[in-house]
Image (cartoon, rainbow, N blue to C red; front, side, top):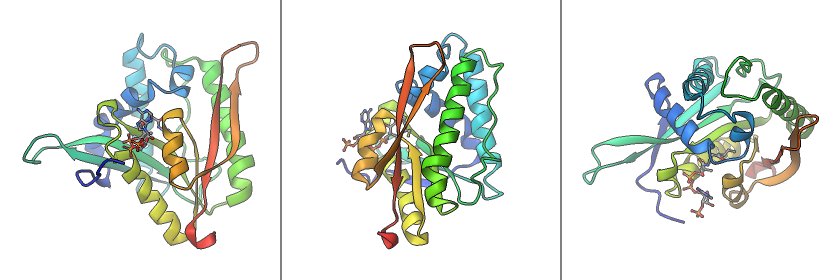
Length: 224
Ligand SMILES: CC(C)(COP(=O)(O)OP(=O)(O)OC[C@H]1O[C@@H](n2cnc3c(N)ncnc32)[C@H](O)[C@@H]1OP(=O)(O)O)[C@@H](O)C(=O)NCCC(=O)NCCS
């Protein structure tokens, strides 16, 4: 693994919102589930930006209540390390809100999305959370909602560091960590001690296109 000394993490500020939105759009476009749900993202980039920004703002608005934690990773982008750039972020859903009450609602009028797929994805992940995570861990879990690094800054340790924040918290408080893993992140999660506990299949009836995401869980050190 490459050295991670240059990366620092901190709690996100409201002023980081646009930087975080850019990271989301650039990082998730090469995955599977964003292009599946938002196939017209680059045709309707204004909608894609706007609704992604709104969704991320919703997480930030729920930080104060304790429902979510949003962290950013920064790296120096000049030789003398005087200018820091936000290159990655994570969104965590805190224990105690497993009815999903504070999760942002889907906007079905957005032109960048395929509404049927968005709904199918919401339904399959909600069901999987209940069956694979809540039934097992109840309110003793941290859920990693999002983790993304700007493509040009990937493989420099930012993702590992953001994940480590959650692992340290889980170990300290005896919490499990749960998530649905994107393809580029599976290796990171496996080597950090996560195990696959199931699969989330999303497919709209009558469509051939489908996506499968591994559901993964980390058990805290104190409980293993
Ligand atoms: C997953 C992700 C957040 C990792 O961020 P990162 O800052 O590159 O993380 P690290 O530098 O700590 O790298 C950790 C490991 O992730 C994997 N990884 C990172 N970027 C990758 C890429 N572009 N392709 C394949 N694997 C990648 C590697 O296994 C890497 O370890 P290695 O460099 O020792 O081989 C980043 O790749 C990303 O934004 N992916 C797209 C969004 C996504 O799928 N998020 C996860 C949703 S659950």
